[in-house]
Image (cartoon, rainbow, N blue to C red; front, side):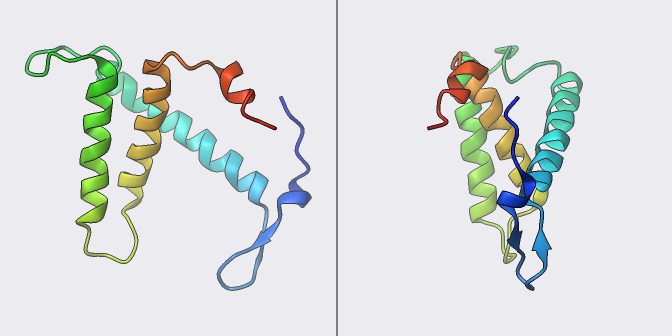
Length: 113
């Protein structure tokens, strides 16, 4: 695991308070992992192993369709900011998309310059 100095990533929020960006990134991604594992179990791994009752395409295309739906939901939202659930679903589907594409953790780590 890469050691990151949380102080090097500190920023200020919209009202000028200091934030710990590294800590917040870990908190959000840990929670996203728990949520994605929970939903994957609840939905029977349907994104990566679809039942193909109606849609006969592969899991990658199925996930892309789901992402389109989520982006449409955000675009049609009348509020100033997107709903947390929709953003979390997009993060989850992007994660599943990487898996369906066969991307490995080492490939992602290789993106660090």
